[in-house]
Image (cartoon, rainbow, N blue to C red):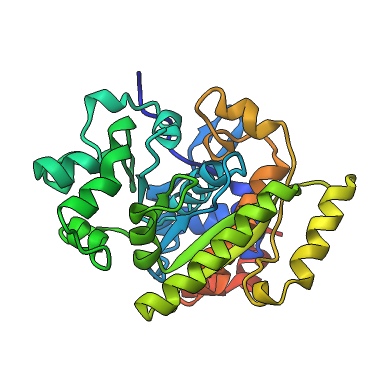
Length: 333
């Protein structure tokens, strides 16, 4: 089975992000000797074109998806924001640590045919041999059920959880702008190691009481880790599967806003409920692999930009030609 298609951004979304017309964007592409590929009758940019067009100096980050509750959309979120950032030109490594391997499945990867994190730990397999290239600028370290013994391996082999990932990724970490780690919905040694390695932990909150309980447990764990390891662990929360038509969504918003422990940790972007996500997931796809009009893609674009803290200013400061929007617009009138 083949690896998934490369992530894509429609020209219309990129032009809106830059605050210019689609015609002006096409002109910028032409000025650099680039031409937007076309799928069906829609033009788009991909990772390769974005790197040449934007040349964004990304602020490198490690993002971990964590919450002690399954089914909140954690894996879906990691999948979408990693693909979105890649389509904007970022070099991305996705690490699947969940023994269920749902993210690995989404990438059409047979876990039994490739090394996983546990093989690196127990068999000293080089990290380079375990990483799979999915598409330009997008790599994944897959998972399989044997990863369930990572915790016991950490304990019995007396591995340093403070430097767990630094030691594993030492030879490749500088190859990437962003590293995204999908964690199992548990508290464990492996998840603790991830928390200590990550720059930001992201937690999707669904409008239900069980998801709220999972978030409470996560907050308590982060407070404990901060104290025990003397490390300032940052976390961000966003509302997922949100619908302004349901009472539960409204109650969840009020809970978030009224919790002093979440102050400065709430992302302004929410992801609306849509059947589009599970429909695409059943085909091992997401909204960045096609060009169909999608409100969910818009949501995940905004979430990615907010979480990773890059904006059109990061593009403009690297491109004087794009800065000259007014003169460009005059040329196309």
